[in-house]
Amino acid sequence: MATRRIGRSTVRFAAPPVIVSAGTVAGPMESRGPMARWFDEVVPDDMFGERSAEKAERRFMGDAVKIALTQAAVQPEQVDYFIAGDLLNQVITASFTAEDLGMPFIGVYGACSTSAQSLTVASALVDAGFADLALAATSSHYQTAERQFRYPIELNIQRKSTSQYTATGAGAVLVGRSGGKVKITEATVGRVIDMGTKDPNQMGPAMAPAAAETIFSHLADTGRDPGFYDVIITGDLGSVGSQILLELMQRRGVPLGDNYADGGVMLFQGVRGTGVGGSGCACSALIMDGFVWKRMCEGEIRRALIVATGALLSPLSWQQGESVPCIANAVTLQV
Image (cartoon, rainbow, N blue to C red; front, side, top):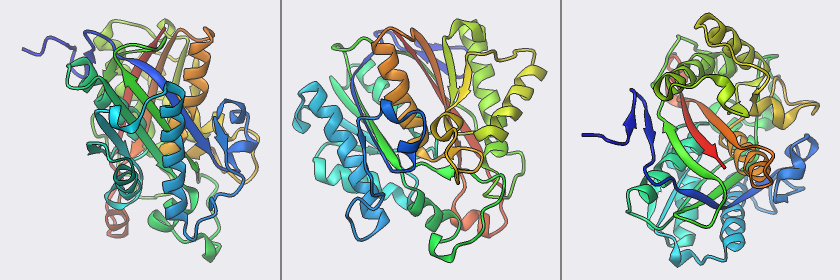
């Protein structure tokens, strides 16, 4: 019998793991937004001195991991599992990072929801007694994502008005049994929702129904209302998708209040050239591992619901005219 499962989609950790430390590394565009002061490292060159954007992304993830380990005074050999993912084919950024670290590796993929997915797996391993320390990390890069999912930026293709700007950066979280103020108390695993969207430039609207489904399921499973949380933050719906989410939740009779915000909007608010907001694995990771975790450590936020959203398309699927299946995964953080 699944004694730690509550409702249909949510697990409640019996001995809630804690965030021991976190590391965030952001690119130059991200440093222009209002979230910049919450990042541990800002890199002025999104190529990070490397010959390819893919190698640069690897540097972003590697540095985020080093920051998290250094903050906790933990050596790589002390970490039981490395759970990580990214947007590139076969999660290659995470795989090369795992090779450098030499840790037992679990590669995960939830598109832009990977930050919550990797944190869920890490927390479950610690809660179940399979690990004392687990490291969860994710990354994305504007240039690598554009090259893989749309067009190389060298072609100078005009972006649509609904396009989002893939965040360049990485976040890493060290999860343990003790040693931190912020507990991971629950995780809600989303269902794949496909509303038939086929345009890879319409990610926010495509992901909004998945976000609504996961938030509604989480609240129903836990018997809570949105007001229980100081903040409810979606990963990267952007201004268009987040407005759709608000309308969907209103229709379900569970309206979200002033405690709701979207990480994609937060990340690039006021930054020209970023469309309707941020996207990418790093978007949710930078907000959760930087802004939210640090404010919780300072006592400014006590309860947070992080709902990372992901569009599960591949270059092959959308080029063949397939629709975009989407998912949202959520974690509850409490002081």
